[in-house]
Image (tube, rainbow, N blue to C red; front, side, top):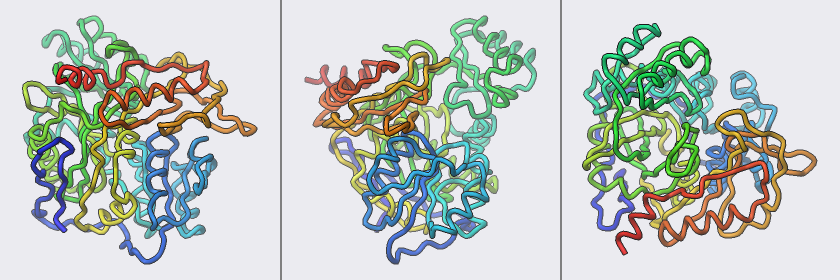
Length: 463
């Protein structure tokens, strides 16, 4: 079967989904068979992992499904086993659990375990894991590494320089002027990006990252890059060496405040598809961003295998790469999983076997509203009860920062819930999602009330 995906846009032509590998790369995963049911472990505790586990559980091939460490949502899902004491950073503990419980397939959700090499450790133990090696996960773990790949392989991105000395970084900022972007090179939970409108803001960002330790070790090295304006979008693809299969796109809302104001967060909501991602831009993203990344990683001796996230800035019909992530986005994953009509487990197993796959998606848009704890992304409230979840209809509530205490769902802070709904168009999806949000009793939480506003404006303008 040809690995081809048709865009959700009406009348779109099929995207070029696969290119023959220029050279073979040794597979690092164990050979996966399809006989019988597969016991599966999903690693992670966020909304992304709840959504992935929810979708995997729908597969007839899924045996016992474990989630570690999981959250209250995964604990309450029928047919899932949540393991709060299983620590993804303890590779031996994870491997021993898999062997003792016949787990044959592990899906690693978050970036931190991938950067720490959990997929490598599992593969060495003969357990198939979906996710890149630690060497390939540098695409997210080190923005300096990612930007250098872009420079070396001519991938369109913002002009940049990398610094380990604050004074040199500030001198470069003075030379370039504002607005300008300052980023931690290391992982910072989606918060290590400062879009400075003035030189003073940029200098302060350097001080916070490099001198005041605001982001820990992530800020030891910083990337300073030109400010790109336009409209952001998220695009996803499966990569297996140099073979690439496009998924679909979404749009995330990073800023904490309505109208995209205030500091960046891990994401306050998302919707899919994103109208700004036209078939032409999707094709350009594959040709100029995804394929060259896959080729470059192979050429560097660190072939990428897994799902890649391309954060795009789109202006005048063309996309530039803002960043790569080495996993499904969060909350974009929630919006994608409710649209996916294919068997996720069989698709991932086929990806691990190096087989061609074809994914099918619902044409109905989806929209996710994040309920966060008061104070987020700064110091936030914890321990508040969340009630009336059982009364939600017309939407799926994916948990992130929750736990169970005496049978009650409790907030553990940060991004707490992702309320996801679909509709015949994005306006109906938005209305359904907010109706569900308003059903939930969570006094210690808040949400943006404008998720999907760009797509809704486009829809109304077209009517």
